[in-house]
Length: 181
Length: 152
Image (tube, chains in turn brown, green):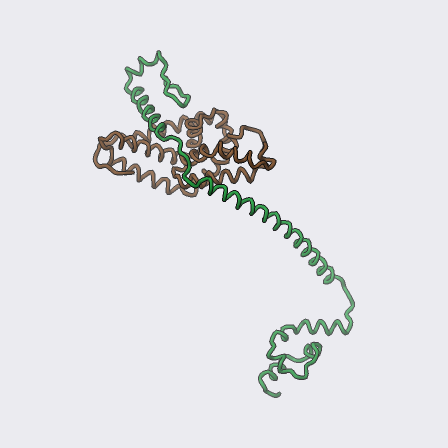
């Protein structure tokens, strides 16, 4: 690839092409915008630093998402308790929320899904995000996550089941008090 | 029944009748539909303002660190080579068995009493000490007496 030979413009092109995708992948996986921004920058720095060792065995998208996945998993491992705490907080709010206002309910659902995504088991979350938001094929996801295609299907299926379950928990409640989340 | 491919809840036409008459399946389809809607609301965002500026500043910093790292490695390789050579020479000298001459014996004695030279107050009181060789032969107890002004 051109950027491996020190072509800065090629790197900038890749950066522009993948910036938002990596940022949003990290945001959904980490459930935190500021941390996702930092993580996305780290990923591009890693890509730049490892440009000479990159070998074209798979699509570049699989390569960069693999780096992003590993980096985000490490961050999640360091901050797992905070995500869980935040999930409980949202659950408490949802317990007492369910305003008759439809927009409040939708906001609660959105927040519940975000938290559920960020607290799914790592590979389930990554596989689901890559499939749903990135539109990647099973094969691409399998490459990015270092798992088989069969395992990829299973991860996505389990992730969806769990998200449905979590969404149901946070929305099937009696309306009481409105809390801003 | 419900298509397992992610991205859509694709109900086959011939299964629709079953879903319509099955509370469990209908409930599950509704849950999945609600999930789809919630996920759709979580649209892609752009990173915050200043993201690119911060990133390229970090990249430049990383590049300059990389260059400094290269120079540093180069310097250390030179320094490392010198240190290895010096260590090898020292080891060689220490291991070679050389006959000791009287002059060398004096030097060795001096070396064994170098700690005395570290006490400059003591040395300054020794007016008649002109050479290190003499100093090396002075008894430590005598030096201490001189320093304290006592006589044996």
